[in-house]
Amino acid sequence: MFDAVRNNKKIVQIFLALITIPFALWGLESYTNLSSTAGGVAATVGKAEISEAELKDALSRQQEQLREQYGPAAAEIAQSTAFRTGVLDRLINERAVDNKVKSARLLVPDALVRDTILNFQEFKNDEGKFSREKYSAELRARGMTETAFEERVRVGLAEQMLLGPIVQSARAPRSVLERWIALQDEEREVAELHIDAKPFEAKVKLADDAAQKYYDANRAEFEVPEQVKVEYVALSAEDLAKQVKVSDEEARKWYSDNAARYREAEERRASHILITADRGAPKDVRDAARKKAEEVLAQVRANPADFGKLAKTASQDPSSAANNGDLGFFARGAMVKPFEDATFELKKGEISGIVESDFGYHIIQLTDVRGGTAKPFEAARAEIVDELTRQAGSKRYSEAAEQFTNLVYEQSDSLKPAADKLGLAIQKSEWLSKGQVPPGILGNAKLQGAIFNADNIKDQRNTEAVDVGAGTLVSARVTEHKAAELRPFEQAKPLIESRLVADEATKLAKADGEAKLAQLAKGEKLSLGWGASNKLKRGAGLMPEAQKAVFGAPSDKLPAYVGVASPVGGYSLYRIDRVSKPVVAANDPRFEGTGAAYTRLAGELDSRAYISALRDKLGVKINAAPVVSEEIPAE
Image (cartoon, rainbow, N blue to C red; front, side, top):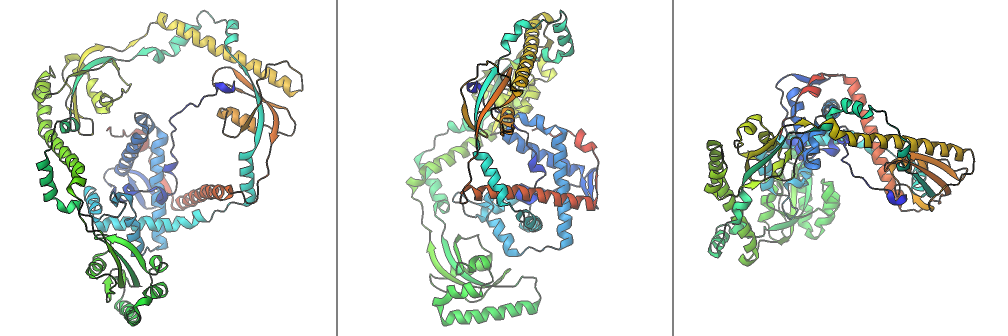
């Protein structure tokens, strides 16, 4: 029966991300979504409040992430009380940590904020380098200023400073790691005997009214949902773009008009020596720092060849000092403006004077220059044609969208006028069941709601033009309809009886298996048709429940026997004939990886305990109503 083992994939409802270390899981979204304070209060943490509006916003954003991961199944997950409670719990954790950060007066250097922002993937171009243009555009799209965003990053880093030492303090005892690795290597020789439920079906005698009782108690199982067939038209920017033909002349003109886009950005490599002094530091502090920088500059001027050595010993930028002051290559927009302006004015090998920035006083040496060359038209042609095609498609879509919307609304008894006017094909669906999401554009939640709208069904009129995403508008019209109905008992009876017989047979098979297991445990000899022994390790070859039973069985006396109900029907007995426990070598390479995984998990558990203590100290009051009653906005 080992061949009968299947790997059944399920959607796992994971909510760990809602309660784990805040900064470790935050991305750009956590910094750029502003909370609202309108409406009632969902919870209070000490003196801080979490508004209902803020909770609703967090629920909506988390639901969107679920939708991207799990598709249609996300809706059911997101409506669960566990999900909503988890989101609120995360917000409470954030408030508790923020309170501690403020009371501890944790300060984050400007340089660390800068380096963190430079490493955000959202702000990098296709070559993986920080782009000032993407940075500004992304923040504008989210309605944030650079100052506000930098402050949010600073807060996140401060929270990491608070929780980081707790996470990193966890340690994995070598004895524990050795035991863990040994368990993974342990091998058990196992034979299986599967007791199939099918032969027991002949012994099952159902009561005359068993099927009727089941039908009456489980009517929802036998409801046939409302069904419709529809015809529909779709206006798509992508389809319109396919109709566009870009001439060579148009492509060359675009290349000429946008020459800067096809020029490789000039990049410069520089080293620097930094004497730190924040812009807001007292004048005497900044004067002392400048004097120190002037002394270092004099040493550099006296012996330019020793720039790297001086950077290593004198620079107060630890990340670059370790590399003799080297900052690597960077383009315009990657550094603060005074530093950038000075660097791009230097010639290769030149050393600047004192350059003042928000971070302090710099001495810069330009070590290399690259880039600044243009990509030839032929190399850029495909990219240009694609760009012009998409632009033309988007323009045609914008021009046609309003016309499409008006036509399907104003002539709501037919899709033909819109199809004829805009050159669209009228498509037809098979039967669609209410509550069952079909693949493709008809599976859009808003469109499904419009299709199954009672008035649209009754009058067989066009739905409104629904934006289903990806630059596509769809309107549908019901052509056939079947009302929801309860399948008659006589139709359902054979299925019910078959199910009840199978259930009873499974119980008999289990009872038989458990009886045999009890006899084997007593040492009785039974003539059974065991399968061949197989060598197994944890995590392979068995269903989870069987894994747990087989590898949890004592191995001091062999053979050992265990049994579990089989997910493929019936009952399975397992005979453990031999257990191999290999010795873990002292230099086993898995110690490092296993230790890292163990300490990471232990650190997260410690941080949760710490956050829980912060919450207890502050006091948390939860208004349960918003958690269980608010509807999450549909897409």
